[in-house]
Length: 384
Image (cartoon, rainbow, N blue to C red; front, side, top):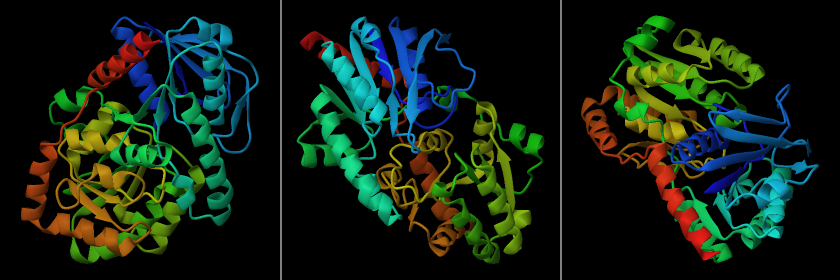
């Protein structure tokens, strides 16, 4: 089968949607499919218009971006390329680039599978102007997406419910997968500890993008409260992102006199990430981003047996069961975050029970996700 994935940005081995597309596309190639990723050239400095990455054909087209990534508009047509595909899979209904590419696919008679994620999240944004104008944009773009889709995929039950109740569209919930290494690699905390010289008994980890929307300042503000009740701990923040925000976090930690409790490492490779999870007592996601649809790191933590403390933002309440696989805390609330972390650091019985629950969570690999989605492709292609 010839498959075209449409995603408005595509950065191999970077987080979010792009990372999911990469894994899915590469697994589909292994199953014998002919896979193309259609994306934009925005922010891809020096990359060619066409290239092969791990046997996946990447086709970048000229595009303009109007401030926000979702407001990216293609400047050329892909109709000829789309004509040669059997199924077009569009990743995210929020992107104007994706909607326009979807229209081109529909115009040449191609069936469309679409991932719907973070539906209506801009209506909860902290900025009132984004709530108003972003909410109107999202409402419009979701209606446009519904007109295009032949088969809908959602990543969680929250988006599945909104799509059904608001738009009358049924969807199949297909979560993201994880690299098989997370399930098969022997436990190894030594690699991380020795390389980065982190020897405190209790590591509280954050793995992800360093950006104000991720609420890392809330975590830093919680540290003085945690330090009153718990000893021998350190917070390790790993991920790329905003250098200005990283500096502000270090400044905040110094102001609160907890700079000795925080390590910000920047990007770490996959094996180091696995080792960090093995060394960690807790994974913390203090996000304030209402668009959290399916952070991959949640399943990666589960695969390594690590309980989580997460803010009640986006679809995270669908992913983390309170007092079972982790603890849900109030968003933007350092006290709530500190209380949850303290409970897990000081209550051995609670922590042990939670770890046992975490170990029983069913996790899918990318191969298993690929097989589920291939069934959807076969159904839609056969129907057309």
